[in-house]
Length: 162
Image 1 (tube, rainbow, N blue to C red):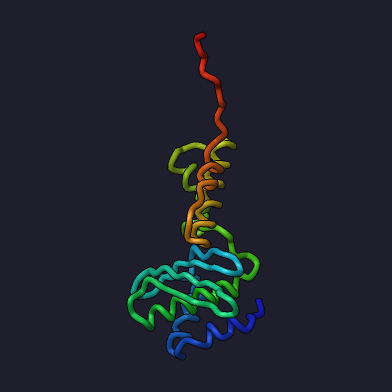
Image 2 (cartoon, helix red, strand yellow):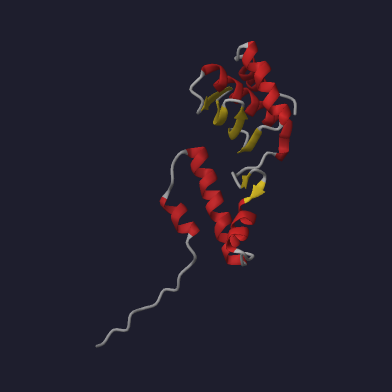
């Protein structure tokens, strides 16, 4: 993936030491659970000092990033590694956080239950993933999100005695 100007500016905003350290986790495959779209990316980066969550958001023509690491160098390293992983994956970046250590959530649920999910159950999990993805991107839930995840229920009229 060829980086645009906003991506290049973001990558070049980090000190050289953070850029060098940020290339190592990306090359070693330590950037896991990365997901998002062209405006928002989240990831998990494993560093020798721990595992950290990153968030990158494009606002206008500028990327803004954050990381759970308290150390500024480690935070920059993780953000850099997340952006590098995004560029490496290109169009293969999943839109939702449906994987844990590269295992789809549906597979994990089926393993824990000891059976396959039926179509209605799999559909429900997919709906939850979509709502979560939207929550992560927009930072809010809407009342219609709750309506969309619940199965349609039968409406019955109460028998009235006249």
